[in-house]
Image (cartoon, one colour):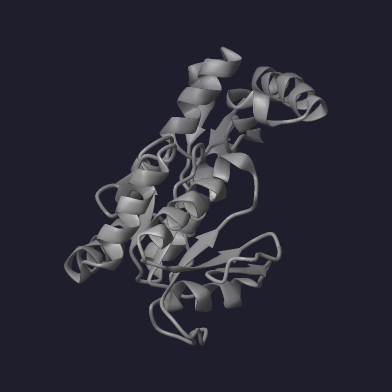
Length: 246
């Protein structure tokens, strides 16, 4: 049995180096062919796996991720920050689209609307006062950042699932995300969707959410309902069922 979260290295092949592309072209189809059962995390990933490996549909089972609602909760300790901020939880890989978020914030800054962005992931230094690279943090610290943020911004270009989406909704903050890939499948109606390849649309989404408390409150309410459909206990039970049949 094999778990394949996504086929990003095949779908966005030109964004990876030669060895990464070669590894993906060999290992993913090979795993699909030799495994009696393949688990993936979304219907989007299932379609992508079939598209890029020409594998057997009957072999693939979709088991979504879950979220620890005890840890990622609106109640609990918060991070002190001098001003409201957006939260970005991802590394600097191209498809995570930090470049799109930064371009959107630059557009807003040129209009006199400056929003702070806290970036959890790779540690860097920026000459822009509104960018704050925190680096990697523990799960407990991450939970504090979620419940302290005005919103999660996650306009990824390609994602097999997008666990930060569940973590943010569970933490009681609104979500701005991409209308592409698996994001609509994870968030349903509980997100403000933007075109990840259009920084002006990302900027409009940020402005709409942060300047309209009614929109933000509605997304938080919808997020609470949406996150109830995902649990690690259910994911574990489904894994056990699949393994029991092998």
